[in-house]
Length: 183
Image (cartoon, rainbow, N blue to C red; front, side, top):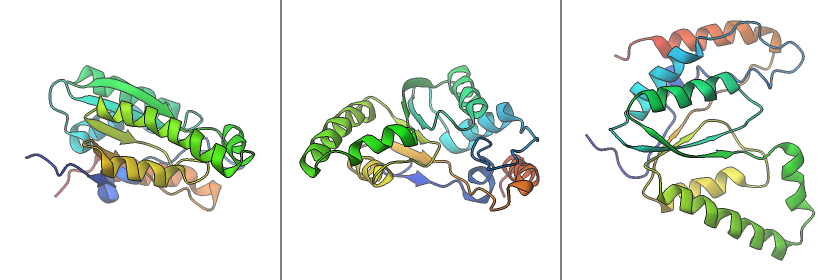
């Protein structure tokens, strides 16, 4: 069954909630380390449902969950997929620069960036959006590009616990939910 051309999938309670970012937990980072390899394989098999030769564009924050990103790359390429490109969300430091530009300069810059992103979308079948962006209106710009393209988009996102002391427990709960068989 072919999915509609504009799909942003939050993957329900199971898969979307499993991916708690370790690097962003404030004072007490999690000591529990999920089975990233299995979680990536579940993501690729259950959510992406790749067909042979499908091209996947990864989009992530390089400061968060590097083990997950590496496991996703391996799961995509060891299956039948091809990684067509990778986009890294800008760091908070990099995101500050556009704020120093005039409105006209910022519009020109964003138009140039978006043109490059659209080229990547045009040469990809699936867009795997892993983290939430930083920077001015970045996620809305990507939502518009997804809508205007023919790409199938899967957005994995999750909520950080307010209490960083609960990070280990949250990771374990999310991992267990992701590994559960869908009904």
